[in-house]
Structure formats: C-alpha cells, structure tokens
Amino acid sequence: MSEQVPEDLRRRASAWRVASAYLADERVARLRAMTDDDAREIIARIFNGPVPKPIERECGLVAQQRLFRKLK
Image (cartoon, rainbow, N blue to C red; front, side):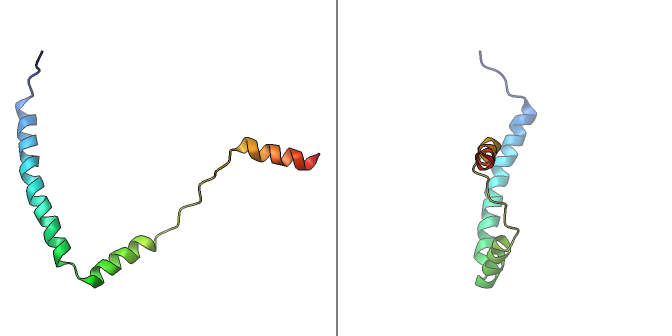
C-alpha cells in the first residue's frame, strides 16, 4: 500500500533541501558579520518591548468565594 508522491511535491522538497543549505550559510555569514554593537542593539530592542500582563493564577470562582467570605 505505497502511495505515490506527486512530482511537483518532489520538486518542491528538493528545492527546499537545496535552498536550506544556502539559507543556513547566509544566516551564519550574517551572524559573523554582526558587530557587538549590533548584537547589543538587537537585544535591547527585544527586552525593551511591551511587558506582558501577569498570568492570572486563580479562577473567578476562587475570587467569588473570597468576596462572599468577606461579606459574612
């Protein structure tokens, strides 16, 4: 029960295998060319972004029970 893979999918997979090698080389070259100041600037941009809201650790039911206990 072997299924045939369409020819266009084989060509795409082959093209991506070839392209991935070139893209990996490009990535390495860009990282090597990066100066320390470039790296610091990128890191600063990452960490100076908006701070996400803290995750709420309790459900609404717990808050309701706390409120009802105060009202007693």
